Length: 222
Image (tube, rainbow, N blue to C red):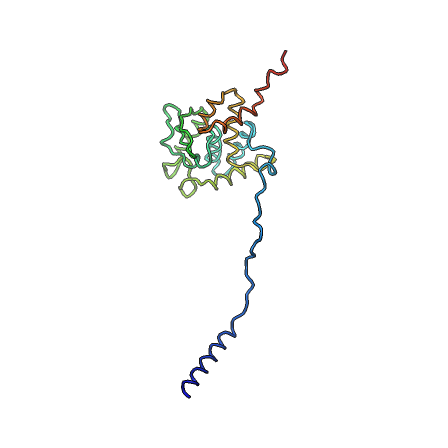
């Protein structure tokens, strides 16, 4: 009898505990179809900036709280056709101020190269190094003194594009394309352009020379 009463008592306790439970609707909804990202062609008419547009974005970035750093980042990325990951990983030991050269390390198994640094860019980098506090092996650092992030640069570029009045969303890789098109428009041959941008495959470089308006500059001259 004692055993039977004990079992009945335990079952009653379990029943009382279960009575406090209730069904809760899940907070998340399981999607049956994953939303697809819209193609770039639907978001903007082209994937590069012109030299004039780059200058507008640079000037817009100068109005930021850290305007000198931000505008210098955009300028360096454009002049050397840097991918955003190459830009944020840039270190002071890659810059030779005495010879005004930049030792470019490429990602994606790209070919490294040595680029000249123009006067305005050299002055901007000297000032950035002089004013950088605390000192860092990285050229571009955040407010927390760590290396700048790719996401942080993308957000800054987008804000600068809006401030500059760009009719489309601006993203970092547009600077690399802007570099390719600008150099192609200046008449540089495809092989030299391939070496400058560090392309392993020349087919990635051909797009710039194919769309250069200079290919047709003498068509209407008699």
